[in-house]
Length: 460
Length: 169
Image 1 (tube, each protein chain N blue to C red):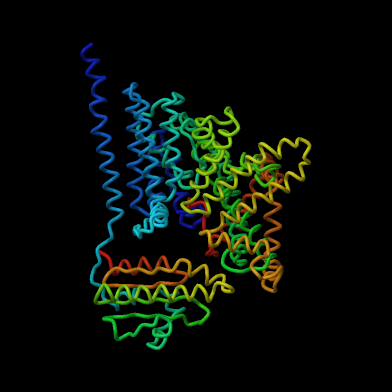
Image 2 (image 1 turned 90 degrees about the horizontal axis):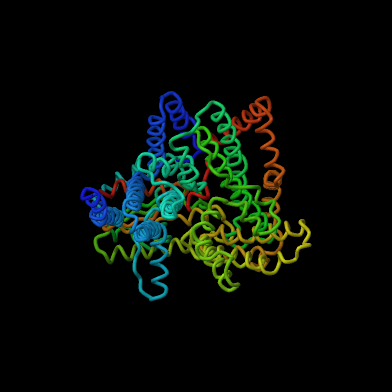
């Protein structure tokens, strides 16, 4: 089920909120939230709810063993990590690894096509954070399986993040304030997110699709239009989803971490990654980069650490060569900035912004593809090597029909737009209610009438 | 003292059986996921009724023997049963071919013909038919002996689900 569907907006969410607010007691509210979360997850592919429940029970039991057998803590941690990563690896990378094996050995093993269990990358990272933090003594063991299950399955953040670490919600699972004020604030945040998704991301998606930048030869102008539209679509799609998740969390009394901070306003690629998918970046920093030694090592080891983290970041996004390449591309960019570019202290901010946008959008050229063949097509198109020239009637038509939404998207992606939203949210009901009402009416009108409604990050 | 020792021993005694139990459950689940569902005898008319949703029946029409030969290089009489739908508009890529074969060799021949058809369609739309090209990326070619099928179109996921419903246990 997706947040921007009629089923969710008109049936699932109202029913869940009604029961959650009407039924008394924390325990009852937790049960309601857990049951609705399981239904939410099972909506598309019911079979995988079994895998998720098994995964929850496994991590919960391993947590208990870790507490009961202190001498075995490290061994239990390793076993749990191996099983969790093994499951993620199997369900997400099995087909890809068989392909790699076949291409290396010349064999032709066939991989049974498995549907990707939705959200597995997100919930695996959440359960891993629990067992690792438990091992490190940062959190207390959760003895109640219902509360642990709720931490993992909570539907607002279950299938596309933000990746919520256990320590963030540990107290809220038992002690949280559920109030009408929180409900109102959460609704406002949800509506802003919905509008980002439906009014901006979906329309930008239509512009991107119309250019066909990865499908075949396209003139340079059409290719850049497609790339820019995709970069904006991805931002509004994912940050809109995160806004909706954070808003839903507030409605139920939870404070989820922010996942975006106007990333296209960054002055360096390093800065960009502090503002884009913040929960994933901080997860890798906390559980991979720092344990590897972080930057408190020699230069060669530091470079290796960065490349390992970015290889994993790319691979986390998808089982394909282009995602690995995308991750390594960022590893190299960050090393370049760390050791060369950012040593130039007096670099003007405007120049930094141009460099960042160029680097990031070229990176989306790798990200938007499904295969290395498409990567080749995209970059040939972007740099005029496809033989389609600079401009064509079709690309002018695409530009004229898409330019308005691209410009609106660009304006809404700058830091000022974020500040404006925050100002509206804090300026009292007189401002919040009319703005939210207009956005809600427009969004619902689009949800009801439009067919194009994918969530790009669901495939991760 | 003794009670405390027993208390400490119990988790250690339970750990490995517990771990094995979980591994067995995960293994069983993976084994289940990897199982091909068994094929049931399908009535070709039921398959036709199932896939002819409002949208698909509007976009496609019955394919002739000539079209089958031209597009796939196959002859209808060579196969036990066959259902073929072609797009009404020649610029569309909506297409459905469902063949019941007698032998594994026939299945292989039909599958190869379908792959070649898809490859030609991709080449044809690659340069100018952006929408068609992206739709073709999701084309399903599957062998579920004795059935072999080719499904292309905007509703491919739904059509595939319907075909599986008719052909799998």
